[in-house]
Image (cartoon, rainbow, N blue to C red; front, side, top):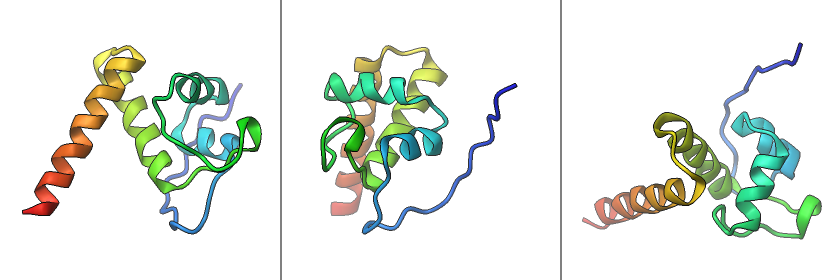
Length: 96
């Protein structure tokens, strides 16, 4: 039996996560993240491949991608477009 417990917390901007830590925080496996990274849907990280470090922005984006994909049975590219639109709405509302 696999432990599916997901811990939710606040990531401080100065702290970064490894690929495995990011996967755990999002409740997905590292392969899921690797596919989105390879497709350019997750954004940039510092470092390369398994040595990459991810900031809170990538954590938020990965969680949103996962939620859109699961909730709407969306393919990764469509989910990324929806997340981009959500982010743009947040930026526009903050600019008011």
